[in-house]
Structures are given as C-alpha cells and as structure tokens.
Image 1 (cartoon, rainbow, N blue to C red):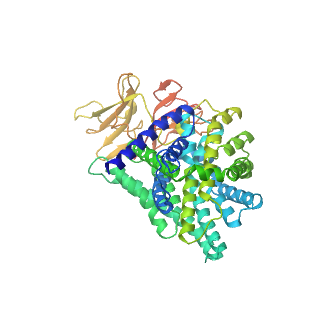
Image 2: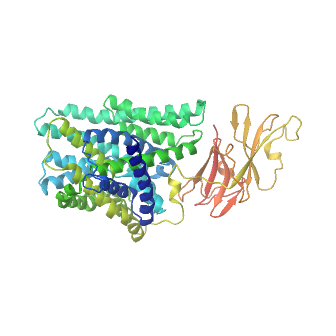
Length: 545
C-alpha cells in the first residue's frame, strides 16, 4: 500500500509540473497528462500493465460527471446569452452533422463498415471544454463578436449529444452483428428520454440545490461544498436510472447553480476548480495508461486521414451550415471551425464503446480506442497549438476586454473597502432619507441590513434605529478587501451592444440591482445618478436578496 500511494503522489506531482511546462510551451495540459500516462504504461518506461476497459469506463464516467458539472458551473450566462442560440445549435445539430459527415467519410473512403463508421463519427463529434477553456485562459485569448463565449458554451454543452449518438451507434452496431438491437420505436424513445429526462432533472436539481444553499445554514464551514458534490452526483444518477442523459442533467444543474445568487460562491468556485483539475489529471493519465504506442503506429494513417477530414471538412461544414444564416462573419466561422478541439470525452466514449461491445460478446473490426486516441492527439497538438496564431491571422483578437470575464470563476478583485456601522438610538441620521445624508467624499452606502432583510438603499429610503449600514470607499493599496460585506458583489462588463451603454444611472434605476462601483480602464468611479455608462465599463453590482 505505501508503494502504491507513493506512486500516486509521484504521478500527481509530475502532472502539476507538466501543467506548468505545458503552460510555458502553449500546449494544452491534456496532451502532457496523456503522454505521462503512456510513459508509465505497458510500452513505456515503468511497464504498468493496464487494459481493463470496463474498470476504466466506470472510473472515467465518475470523473466526467464533475467535468461536465463544472463546465456548466464555470460558464457565465450573462456573457453567453447573446450567442446562446448559436451555441445550442452547434452543441446539438452541429454535433449530429459532424458525426454523419465523419461517418460518411469512414464508410465511403476508408471502407469501414456502416456501424463502426457511425460509431467513430459519434465518439469524435463533440469538442473538448477542458482544452478550449485552457487555451482561452492561458493565452488571455479574448475574441471578437463574443466568440470566446460561443466556444465556451458550445464545448461545455455538446458532450451529452455525443454521448447520446454513441449509445444509438452501439445499438445499430449490435443489430448489425446479429444482436437484438433496438427497433425504430425504441430508438425514438431512447432519443426523447435522453433529452427530456436529462433536461428536466438538470433544471429541477439545479434550482432545488440553489434554493437549499440560499435558505439552509450549514452547521460547519465546508459542508456547502460537500452538498454541491452530492448535487452534481445525484443530477447524473437520477436521470441515468430511468434512461435519461445524466451528463446533460449534470451540465444543466451546473450552469443553473453557477449563475445563481448563492452564498460563498467564490469559495465553491475555488474548491471545484481544484477538484476538477485533479479529476482531469486522473482521467487523462488513465487514458494514456490504456494507450499502447505500438498499437498507435498500426492505426496512424487512417487516424490521420479521419483527423484531417474532421478538422478541414466535417467541422467547417457543420459550422458554416449553422452560423451562416445568422450572418456571422466568415473569419469568425473559420476560427470557430478551427477551435473544434477533440479531447477526453471522445476517448472516454471510445472506452465505453469498446467495453460495451466486448460485454455483449461482439468484436470491433478496427481498433476504435487507438484510432480515437490518435485523432485527439492530432487535434490537441495541431489545432490547439495553432489556435492563438489562427486567431491573430484572422483578425479575431479583441484587446478591449478581458476573456476571464466570460467565466464564472473570474476573481473579482475589487479595490474598495467596506465599513459596517450599526445605527445607535440617538443618531442624527435616524428618520432621515438617504438623499439628505452627507457622506464622506468618495464614499457610498451600498447596503442596509434590517433584522433579517437586505435592503438596497435608494434616495427615499429612511434610516432607522438598529439598521446596520454597509458603506464602501476606495482603499489604499496596502489594505485588503473586506469579505463579509462583499460576498454578494459581482462584476458586470458592458459590451458595445448592452442596453445600458450611453445611459445615466438615474435612467436605468433597478429595484433588484445596485451599482456600487464603475471600473473604467484604470479608473475607479464612485457612481452617482448623473454618471453615464460607456462600452467597456465594468460595473461592480449588488443584487437584492
């Protein structure tokens, strides 16, 4: 046991080190972890023999739950909303188009059987959120026309459709090999149940979890993180039990929770960031451990042919068919096509397919796992490494804003200090309206706590004895931000098309949102009713509870 634990710790340390090296070289971390797994594998230096596909499938399925959930949790809906329709089309119909185009190539050109052609197309039809997120973050690759948000939303949500196509392909393959398979009616029910049950449980689970986190007070710190782990797992398990798409449910639950006003969200984000990072290390290393370099050589040519067709034909065809009607610029469509990176989910679905076929006594004519493995390596090494270069050449770089604003885990470091004051019984402010108060310069009243209520202060709000007043002011560089009063603050970047651009704060007065601070470039502006908002402003806002 100590030797096993020593090996595990060594692998983790090496993964962390490789992540740093990969970041310096601009290579997605997925590639580094896979290569490390191959070094430890049967054909590698350490000769660890591992070819248990059913066991690998179970481990990878559990890991994918958290990857899918966090893919939703980290997607900022306010940033993705302008391109939500196009993201949805790419993650559903786009996946189907990509699968069928790739399957047609395998069948007509490579002469693969129709069942296995469809299976190859299905497992390689989705794009990899981990690789896309990593490149956008590490290269600070903000893209014009909300392209970063489009890629994030698509890559985070298209794996469930690929999973569903893989299930259908396995049924077709079973029937082709003389098994019972599924009839037309059963296939239609399979598709509907995957989508309906997955979406329904995801929405219900996400909303219920957000409500519990807001209303229920946990006895000890950290139990809210444990609760969210349970929410992620149950959002997958319940629909899966009745034929629903558990991955779709986990993703939807994650996006609802990640975009809900819940307490300690920053802590939860950091916690799941670490958990997901560890899970990704584990999955990628395990997949590398399964791969045999000697087997990769045998499928290198057909794999390269499929990868080239997938990159230059299948993906671009799907993108142009779906985005051209929305009049997306050609350079944007080319970049979206190139950014369709294949990743861990494709290899995991290949493992699932191999395990399923072997479990029913069937035989695959081609080495599906290593074919898909080669396709993913090609995608990450070529497409991933050249994505920043392609973005620049296509004139798609947008230097006016920060791509990190498109993620929910963007660390909102706000250089203001919060002061909490309880109104004593004899105080001249008691009974007066806020508009009549004289506050210190560059200071603003951001919140009133009255018994159990959080009150957004307005000009006509009357101060009462016992009120807890929370004031904000710009702090010195050597001070630290207050945490208790600032937990509910969020940043809202204003794009050029935002409805508030060009308006004064008095014109956009909202009952639910209070603007605490305006960040304009390097300037910090304490807001007033006459303050006029401009494109590129970042608003620090307080939401009413």
